[in-house]
Length: 150
Image 1 (tube, rainbow, N blue to C red):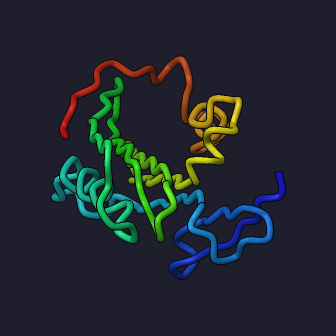
Image 2 (cartoon, helix red, strand yellow; image 1 turned 45 degrees about the horizontal axis):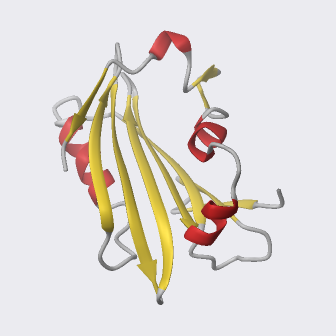
Image 3 (cartoon, rainbow, N blue to C red; image 1 turned 90 degrees about the horizontal axis):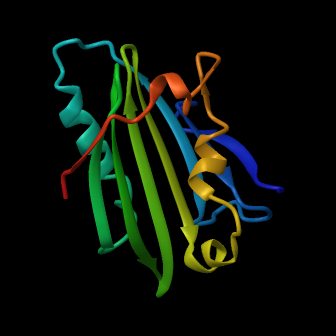
């Protein structure tokens, strides 16, 4: 409760920040890009976005990169342990590609906040995302395969 939102990058990115922390390292961000160049290799684009999702941090630990295959689309997810100024963080990025758009969702939270959290963070956040009026996570778009990339 109490997280605030604002737009960055000329209105392209929605950023949610913890209460009373306008310059916080912790954040949740959502970005959408139109697929306006059909000749692009979108699996490579998604992988590149996920790979650079936490470039503000130094070295990542326990870093995984997976491709998620759905019936009609795909995603690349990255989950990494991060560190900034000696403090541990956890980063999660999901780059989801459907027939019209590329969506990038990033979550960076302090490890102590995650340790105190009693819910399922990913389900609590992604379970409340709607794309074109439909829930992002729904029974019609179930995960078919996970391909470990890194």
